[in-house]
Image 1: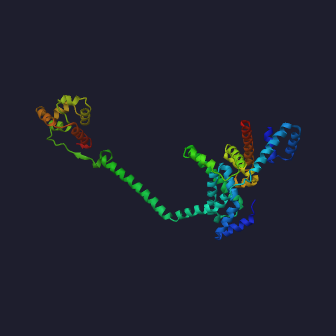
Image 2 (image 1 turned 30 degrees about the horizontal axis):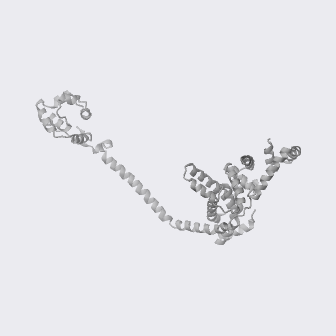
Image 3 (image 1 turned 45 degrees about the horizontal axis):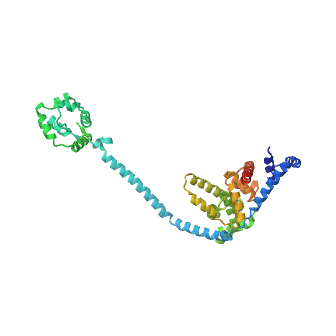
Length: 206
Length: 186
């Protein structure tokens, strides 16, 4: 055991009679041990002097009034636990309602995503020809092959959405209607085309 | 240790509705509460906060006092627990930087000790105490300043006497090393 350790145990009274006697014997024969013990005793004396520190009496005189004032404030606040409970409950209810309402708004704006029953079903009249289809889909100044093979993003999306092929377009559109389609579609700008596309996306076409 | 029969009367008077009995209890123990908190926290402002918190708990729980331990031990248990809880909260605040350096400086300036020499010696000791672990600090303070026996400390903290002795031993060892370092620096 190190020298310091023994001194700590000795001064703290943690040694039994036998250990104490042995340590005191060792102490007699070692000046270094005696010096260390002296140092530790001085430290303990220093500690003792800091036990009862003269302090500002005002502070301790004011301790009870300060507590009483704090306690009074706390008591006043605790007089209204019912109100506090009601406010907390009302806030919680409002938060839940806002959450639920927000969820409903989202559902209304995206009906096609999760509510098939609310999807609007559109029947395309059998009388519609390729001209009117082109009118809806914005195929301006393009031949049927060009429409089917178009690499523009918008047209590619239309073609993909409707699963169009040159063959399918020939099947549903008389060849002599092309000029009329082009004339009509010239009046449709990009924004209108986007709007039409969005509308198609949100409808189920039978 | 305080006179238990007198404490018994004071508690009964307080339970009976005598508010002045509570004041008497506080007057009797306020210095012990403050100085324990002061040595644990290392500054006046924090010690004051802990002391006020202890009085609040004391006031609220004294009516349900079971007389299973002495009032002295019970008050010490509250003070020790509140001091450690305060230090934990403070450490958390410092970790997340909620407490700014300005507040730190302010807490070290404000004091109830007026004598400059005593103030310096106390500051030196507080500085050393703040460097040892809280549990070791607690045992060291209770042994050296509150003059409690290991049995009493065990009753207050709920720790085994063997564990407390080990804590005290390590605390002393570290304090001696730190004091030596301080002397060498000077």
